[in-house]
Image (cartoon, rainbow, N blue to C red; front, top):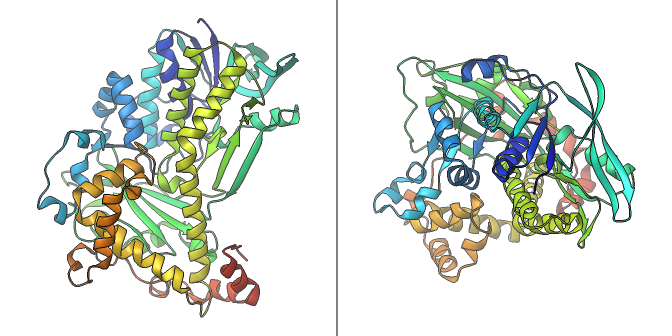
Length: 515
């Protein structure tokens, strides 16, 4: 069917929508508020590309196996372009511990468990140049979408185009379909709600803030090999991770709970950021002055929320002719690295729906049903993990807090059972990664009786017998780290203590609010 599709935004979500729909022959116009990328290589894009509409442009990024597999199967030429530009594929073998390597035998499924990693600017640059080569795709840069054009007809509220402003002034652009890939700053849903669309939404804080700094390896120096000390870790009050990137670059991201006020204020200083990294044994080889140098300031990102929107509650479309993909529809904690993959899955689900039917009511109902079936398990799992992390952060800052017996048992099962089993058994690692990479239900692997029996067996084994499977301590405790970087460890604890019995009651009920 020949249709004109207007896509709001040329970020990863908008580009995925173009990748999905371009081969169907539809005319695609991407309306992008920011300037086009500068001419030149990925380094020029990182240094000079002004993308005010993408607040997390220079934070760490990676494409999980689900998205990388989509690109490999649907657009092999694009994958070749990405690799040619310096993007990296991190295969299953790179995720193995020494225990795995002792008896590892490659399997065909390992070819799917591959991460595609790079600076976000490089990923977006190469994808955009590839998309623009399609004859039925046009990107209109520096075109700001002011509002949606809607009308009421017998079937309900319908979007028929957008009002834009560009160098020529304001004008209306009419299309058969509008895809809102405008991300966190898009106001499309809010406009539709104001027009009477019964769109439902649930939203809650992720409880953390992100801080990222970029580094470049010195000439002739290779990346540090994987060692015993982990290059990613969770200290409860701080999460950290190294993200290898393209062309000799990498980034380090530190995640801090919202309630760690002193730490989050100080961490934006590059010297404090590096001082924190220097206390993590797994990060020390990466930031060694003989290995790499910092090449950016510390980029911060806050106001992180999980959000799920439903455009067709109980199968009844709230709007016609309009579809949201990416953060416009579903937002998740960037900690899990699933935002780009969510956007790509939504885009390809939309493609399937548009190809199968031209009935606008069926299209919206089917799209929402498929998105819910495919993505809600991952969303719910991530949201629940965020709730637990918020609770743990509050407990860390609560003087005298002692976890309940139930909490201690759950922690033991996860730390001494699940984690050890995955670090020891290659088949369990494969299956757990399939859930993490969105290739199957996130908890499917642990529900299989044979896998659960293995995990319980590891849990029941004495710590000395499985000592080799425990990773070294990822970093210092909170008080030690705070003092090492010149901060007062008691500062935030006193704020929590001031809430007294209210805080303790909230912890008992599992409902935690930052003071």
